Length: 547
Image 1 (cartoon, rainbow, N blue to C red):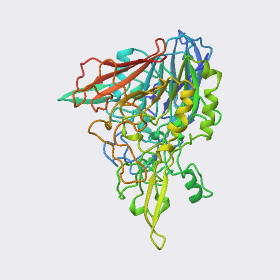
Image 2 (cartoon, helix red, strand yellow):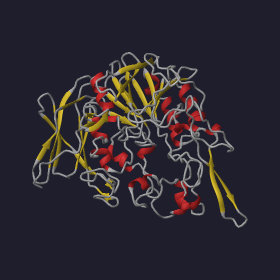
Image 3 (cartoon, rainbow, N blue to C red):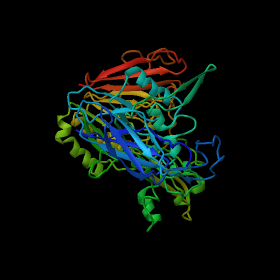
Image 4 (tube, rainbow, N blue to C red):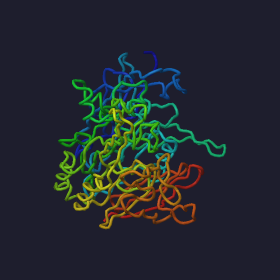
C-alpha cells in the first residue's frame, strides 16, 4: 500500500436527534481507526464503528476505473469490498452548527482526512428550515447540474427528502460512489461530481452541490432500491430485473433463502442509517424535524415494459417463450410491501396518523415513491396486485398468460388517501415518472411530483398518449391523471406547450427542476434551469403554500 489513501465519499449526515447526529462515510480499505473530530477547534473526537457492505459488486456493464465499454475489465458480477464508517456525535445544541471532519487510518498507518464541514442536531419547532425535495437521480444527465443549481440558488439547505430511485442498480457499487462518467449518487450530492454536458459545441462541467455533508437526508424506497433473485443471472442488470413474488418463491424454492430467491433491499439498508418503525424497520418510518412530521411509506412496485407484445415479459403479459416455465415469469408489476387496508404497513400508518407527534406537528407531510396523481406514464396500471389470467389448450398447456389491474382496487387511492385526507395531511410528495407536476384535492391536500432532475419520458397530455392495452377487461387511462384530478398550472412562470398555452407540467430532457420547502413561510417553491443555456438564470416558476 504505497499510494496515498482516499476516502470513497465525503462524510454525510444521518438520523439527527435532539442532541446528536450520525456521521457516515465510506472507504475501500478496512483500516485500523476511523474517527470524527468536532467542535470549534476540532478538539473533541469520537470513534466510528465499521461494517463491510455485503453485496456491492461490479460487472460487465459497470463504468468504473478503466472500464469504459462493456466487459473491458469485468466479464460477470465481481464482489467489490467497501467499508462503511459511522460515528455518533453527541452533546449538541439545537440551532448551533458545529465544525467537523473525518479521518481514516489505513492498515499501513497512512491516514486521510476530509475537509471541514458543519453539523447540527434536529431543529426545534419554530425554527425555519429549507428542505430540498428531490427524487429519481439514477445517474441521469442533468442531475449534477440540478444539484449545483440548488446550492447556487438557495445556499445551504437544512435537510434533503429523497422520494426514491437513488441509483439504477443498487448492488452496483460504482453507481453510488465513482461511476467514471462523473455522475454517481454521492458525488452529485457532495459537490464532487464531474459530469460534462455539451450544447452547440460548448462543454460545461457540473460538480453537483455540497449538500449532505451539512444536511441530513431522509430517503424512501423506490423500485430502483430493490434487487431481484441473487446471483441467478449473468449481469447485475438482469439480477435487478429478476424480482420474484415471495409467495411464488416459497412454492418454488422451499427450504432455500426466501430473500435470495425473491427480492431484497440489502444494499440500500446497509448504506443508510434512517429512523425505524417497529414493524417496518428502515423500510417505512416517521420522523419529526423542526415543525414537520414526515411519514415515509414503502409504496413501490416492479417496473415492467408497458408494450403489449408476447415477445417480452411485461406489465400485461408473460413472454411466449416462458409460458410453461413459471420460474421465468415476471408476475406483472408485483408490489413489494403490502399497503392495502388491514396490512401491517397500513395498520402502522393508521396508528402513526393518530399519534401525538403527528397530530401536534405544524406541517404533516407524507413521502413515498409511486404516484397517486400524475401525468406520467408510470401511474398506469392501477397500484394493485396483478390478477393473473391463464388460457390453456385441451392438453392443459398454457397458450397465453396476461395480467389485469382492477382500477377500483388501487390501494393508494382506495385505502391510503382516505386516511391521509382524514388526518389533514397537507402535502404528499413522490416521484417515479420523471417530470414535474402537481395537484390539489377537493379538500386542499397538495400532491407534488418533482422528479425531472435529469431526464423525462414525457407527459400524457395533449396529443401524447400512454402506451396502454385496449380490449382488456379493465380500462387503462391513456391521457391525463387516471385518478381524476386536474394538474395545476404553475403559478409564476409556466412553460408553454406546443399549443402555445401554459403547460401544467415540465417533462423535458433539457430543463431540470428542483423544489424547496421553506418551513418558515410554509411555501413550496419550484425552480427550473435550462441546461442548453449554461449562463441563464435559474427561474422560480411555481409556488404554493401549505396551510
